[in-house]
Each structure stands twice: as structure tokens, then as C-alpha cells.
Amino acid sequence: MNSFRVALMLKAKGAYGRSVVAGVSDYVQSTRVMWDFLLFEDFRGAISSIGDWSGDGIIADFDDPEFERLFSQSRLPVVAVGGSYERTADYPNNVPYVATDNFALVSAAYDHLVEMGLPHFAFYSQPPAPTNRWAQQREAAFCRICRRDGLDPLLFEGHFNDGLDWDSILGELIDWLTGLPKPVGVIAVTDARARQVLQACIMAGIAVPEEVALVGIDDDQLLRMLARIPISSVRQGTREMGRIAAEMLHRRLIGDRLEQTRILVPPKGLNALASSRHQPTYDPYIMRARHYIRQFAAQGAKVAQVAAYVGVSRATLDMHFRKAFGWTVHDDMLAFRLERAQQMLADRRLSLAEVAARGGFTSLPYMYAVFRRELNCTPTEFQATLPVPTFAETTGSGL
Image 1 (cartoon, rainbow, N blue to C red):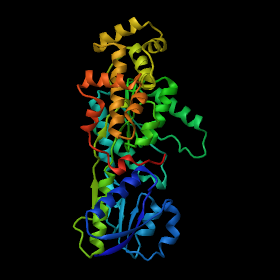
Image 2: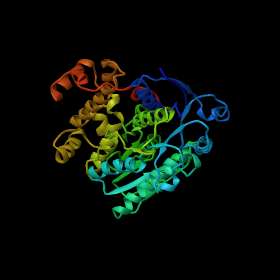
Image 3: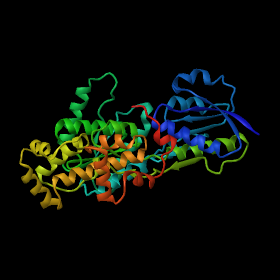
Image 4: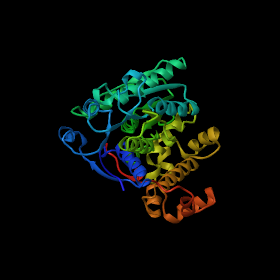
């Protein structure tokens, strides 16, 4: 049985790198080949020593230009993973490359916001840096899409978090969001940046998704857990990237010729949650009420508290909801809690009692009663219909 020593020079602390590693594992487990992996927690700290390593092959993250420079000249077979580029000349030479399709990621977010009926679109990016070429490509993709559709791209790059006052960062972001035409769909370059947008909107009293509908990229479960309002996000095909990269490296190790040396992997869909489910309404009472509901319904907020926040009576608020949607404020809160509970059941990491508590239900029996009435099944029966999450989908992520 063949055996190979392979170094995985990837960001294994984050959701992106972990998912790529999981894809590599998928491929190895599907073959009869023994692979012995070298995997660093701090992959950048291993650059100086990897040149002396007596292994057989490397899978490396070429989004880092230092890695691209070092491993493009490696004596060992290398397969690179990273982001796609608009210009062919920007891809590495003489190294097989598996890329997440940045244009397709942004297109998926944009198309979703179009379907939600948004008339304006904006993009929250990052300041240009050598190590975030993927972010620059996503920003460029957004600009291309806007120009294609005859729109002016509304961009904000903000600051990196390191070394700057967090209040100043949020203050500038609030100023940008406040000045955008409303309602607007905002695409954030990552889920981490999407969470910043959400925090800024909450601080500024900007209703999400009524005034700002928000979509991130990564579908990072940890960041979703930290957000008051569940954030919609595009799922990258990172696990497929890892599987393809491992197969390409294996073929190089056994001397096979690669028919394709550059493969773009499309996104795996979009997880549409509360932050982007925009329903056009210009009723200020409804927008303010839903802004409160999205933040606090899962904490057990009462209808009276919603009405007090809006500044009207419960009867008046119910009248506005019935006129706009045909249901009451209580119905709107219950629908949000039910959706939140379904999301937590899909994750499978919480007990039913914890799902009920975190979903804002007063008790587990009450959650059962709501599921039976609204979905004609119990929470357990609903969960049984869902696919079991993979390892990469349940692992944590760096912030």
C-alpha cells in the first residue's frame, strides 16, 4: 500500500481552512492510500522550516502571497488553493490551482437581494492588503455586477480591527449606513464584516432587514451564534475544494498527468435567514417593531414590550400588521421563533430543551404545541427529516 507525507499549509483555525482540510480527508478516506499529514496550528510560523522537511507533497493556501512565492519554487509537488481572479495573468504559474469562485459568491448574494425586491445595493469590503486579494476580487466582482445592471456601486472598505478604536470603526460604519439610500441590500465580504454591519445597524436604530437587508459570505455557524439577528450567508464550496486539491496532488504524486490545472469551485448555495428576508413596507411602526422582534423575540420578549418600544398601543400595532400582512404582532413573533428553532434543530448541537429556551418559547411543551399546530409534526419528527451536518459544518471558526 502506497504511503505519502503531505503538508497542509492552510488556515486550519478558521471555518474556511477546516472545511478544506475536511475535504482533503474525504478524498484520502475514499482511497487505499496512506497519507501522513503535517498540519500546523500557526501555518505562517512554519514557513522558515518547511523547506527542510523531507515529505512528498504540499497543499498550500496561495491567498497568502508569501506562500505563493515560496511554494511556487518548491522541489516537491504542490497544489494551491485560494480565491479566483478576474485576470488570467494573476493566477500562479506552473502550479495546479483550486479556487473558490469569487464572482459566483458575490453573484449569489446579489441575486438573492434582487429576489427580495431591494432597489439599491452596497458592498462592505476590506482595505486593500497583500494578504486579502480575495476581498479585492469580491469587491471588483460587485462593481462588475453593478455596472452590468446600470447601477452605481456603493462601496465602503472601512478599517481593519487591529490597533484601532472599536467605537471609531463602528462610528464610521454607522455614518456610511445612515447615508445609504433605503431600503438597501448590503453584501459583506465575509460573515465577520456582516456581523459588524448588523451591530452598527442595531446601534443606529436601522431596521434589519426592512431598511438594510444583509448577506455575508462563509456561512460561519459560530459568528451566526454571536449575532442578535441570524445573518444570511453564501456557503463556499470549500470542502469540495479540499477534495479536488487532494485528488490533484495524489495524481501528481503517482506521476499522472493533470488534464486541468485550474479549477473554479462554485458556491454551495445561500443560507437565507432573517437578516435578508426583506418584505417591502414603508410603515414606520412595522419597521420599528420588527427591528425589536428580530433582536429580542428569541429572548422571550412580549408583545407589550414591542408596542412600548414602538411607542403605540398593542391594538394600534396589531392594526398596522393586519393591514400590511394579514396577521398580528404575536403571529409575527411566533413565526420568527419557529424559524429560529428550526435552524437550531438543523445544527443538532443543542438539546430540545435548550432549543426551546434559546428560541424564546416559554417551555418545551409549548414549543411542541407550536410545531404540531404550525408544521403538523413534533420538533423531534422535524429534526429527523433533516440531513446530519458534516464534521466541517459543526467545527468552530476563528473570528
